[in-house]
Length: 114
Image (cartoon, rainbow, N blue to C red):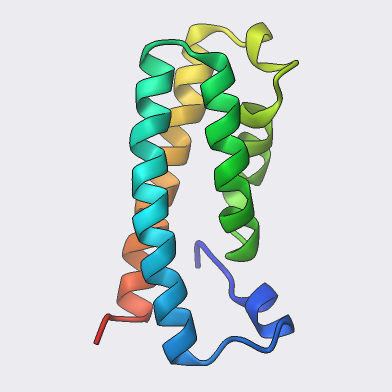
């Protein structure tokens, strides 16, 4: 499983209707953020990449998408970003894209919209 609902369960908010609504919000916001992240990467706008990664971090943590937590934190780090080569930066952005798209697909299989 690419994500985990344990944080939602701790908050006592893991009923199916609520989770389905959160997945819809996650999908909408994350797809928009991925598009912006890709554009920022293309233009090599490091400050924008950092801001978008920061914005994405909370959803990644809420849904425990552990496989990219480190990558998102790296992309968020304003001090570390300038030290990354273009290839590594692109690789991180591609990794986030791939994992998020797979997470969304898995979420929609697990919690189909009604």
